[in-house]
Length: 405
Image (cartoon, rainbow, N blue to C red; front, side):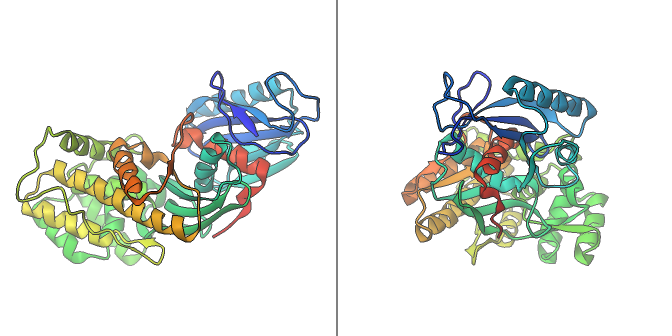
């Protein structure tokens, strides 16, 4: 299959079936990555589309589909792409994020499509990278880190490890330890709630943190819900872990867009890395904070406890932020390298909004290189929601989206 972003010539993946090219129209938006449409074309070879390949288009990024304006633009983009491909609404296979509350999923149900394929979000991240590389058969270890996605078990996912290929599907092979998010998705707007969901099991950590700084009422209310497991959702979300750490270091207000707290965490780490904040002799950047990988689970509890110890002891916030990034990168590399060798994979693939973080990605590249493990990252499409539709389309066409945990 070969799909293209307008003007980019982005290759997705290659296959022998169907006999002619196919139209693969991927519409990019957030949350959920929009949707994707694919239709076989049983015609002779056309210029630019070799026989046996599938071809397609990616729309521009349309923005947050929670807004009415973006939804209107989304539906217009669907009409435009189908028109460009000469495809009626009854012909395509429609792929979409399977979360039932997302607008693209609801919109997909209104289309008289030939077939509808709900696709799990984090598998789509990994599928998109393989599609770009025209490597549908490549067996890889996939690491998908983001904020929110519907998991196979009903939990919020976002710190996931997979093994598999685009054609064979992806099996969940590990994940971040589940936190309890008070208010579920609302924790993305209120990082204080995310912090409560990650520390509710560690009252000693909470006490030490409270002695260091005053915590707002929202935190204590959320902590009570988390301790009682009331109005909470289990979440393996790496994005919410980054939000929680941002609160530890002082960023505790409500945010207008998901990921803002994480961006605020990256900035001091980048300053510390560049040398604009010198490391103190008492608190060197290494060794890393403990972040153990055991039996397919990343346990954040020792990580957060060690960070609070440093915070209480007076270590500069920028140094703690950098040490956190390096600790997460180092443990991801160790876990991925273990799976890489055990599963006889060809590469480690990383995608998802968390990997837009340049400090994290640079540290991860270095750590995987030290393990002798090749790393594949998104190149021509965004690693976040903007690239999800690519993976959704690829999984719909190849049939690899049905593999469960």
